[in-house]
Length: 315
Image (cartoon, rainbow, N blue to C red; front, top):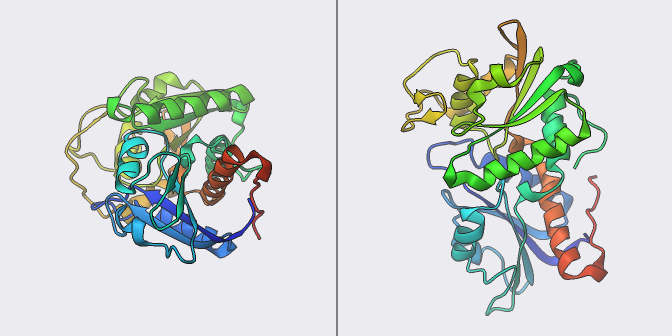
């Protein structure tokens, strides 16, 4: 896309009142995009933090900002992207014209982008040469297990599951299918915390000597710091937080969220003669800044085909 002096970007995140690691990835991606000077302004708004979604209505001066691109930093379509965000930000559809003359453009969530696959693989060894959601998944996979032969490795993409998060489960399955089709790994599986196939069954599901696990979440938190490690059998201490393999109980954090990051520093985890590599959540990858920008370009390419919108390269 071309740089626009009268356009703003609003990145929408969920946020959290209990997990201090929820919003930093969104804020970091915003800072990177701001650095590139592609938009007149770049702002963030959250459902559970400040600035709130309602505050977003007043973030951009209509005298200098004539159009606002709204990009949900969510892993998939769902209740928040289809109901909460449009309601709170007063969007009438993909294109909303305000009484002050501003045009608000509602883009697809980041999790819908094809770059996700490469990012997942990046999380699972070394950074690939071609990065863009499928792309980012690939890169993440290679980052966490740099010297492991993918042909002797199973890649597990972990989503939450449950009826309340049906779309995230569908998105994880979609990415697993894309990566599987590339033939890079011996086995590629989508697994879940709360529905079959369960991540806790990884020993039965994966037959290879090496296993790489990538959480399919926008940010790190108690799921990636505690719940998934416990289900994998790599957590250092047991607690009563899980009532059964795959059913988290009422959340009672036993340590600060930031302290949980040390789980990613202990790779590989040696279990029953196999090596298990555990990656940070996909949404913490810096490549998400590119996906956010690409979603605004995609909006314009679909709404205005003659513009030929393209991503401006990083500098």
